[in-house]
Length: 63
Image 1: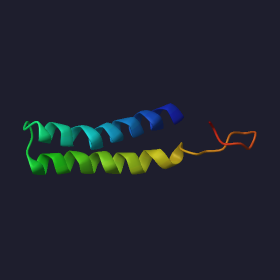
Image 2: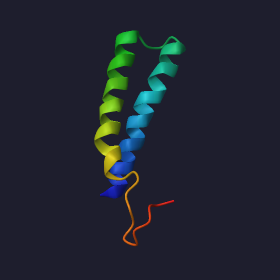
Image 3: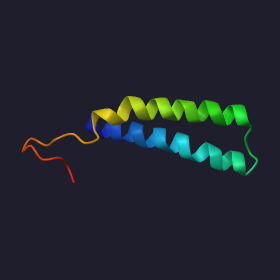
Image 4: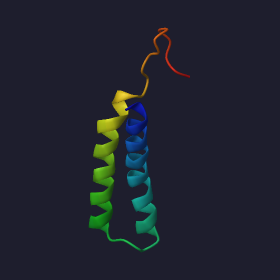
C-alpha cells in the first residue's frame, strides 16, 4: 500500500512539474496546463501525507 502511495505522489509531482515545461515549449495552452497541474496538486496532497515523515516501529523517522 505504501508503495502505491509513493507512486501516486510521484505521478502528482510529475503532473505538477512537466506541464509548465510543455507550455513554455509552446505545445500546450494555458487552460490545459492549469487543469493538469490542478490534478497533479490534488493527487500529491491526497497521497503524500500518508507516507512522508512517518515514524518506524522503533520510534525514529525514516532517513
